[in-house]
Image (cartoon, rainbow, N blue to C red; front, side, top):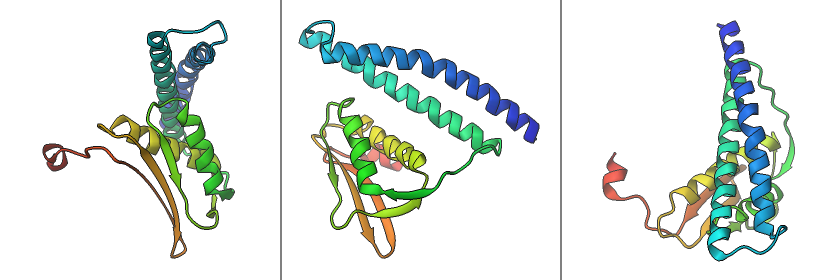
Length: 173
């Protein structure tokens, strides 16, 4: 079973690399267009470029998630825990995602910066996934809020929006 898991992880690693490389190049090109490097864009062109960049980022993140899961399944995953300032890490993730999403993303992190012992890359991946998911499902929202609260020797991270929420029929499902 370990051999099968190893082969699967290897295959997913190759596919993930083959997907990420061209997507990263496409995202880089789209970002250059968005910055106006080759010249100004019309509003319509800017929206198209933003859509390309955002979707490239989403698929790159998905391929990284698949690769991480494959490594976990194959027993090849290693944690690299270190002391992490969760406020600084969350601010960094939000700053990156603000360039990709049209909705404003705010950070609510009262008090001293929460610090924890964690793998910063996994924390970055988890925060990115939570925020991207919130943006994708925030119907009629005007703001995404990321809260990081240090309470009772625990750190709670939540992502919410001010949109309509889940419809009753979807909630039952």
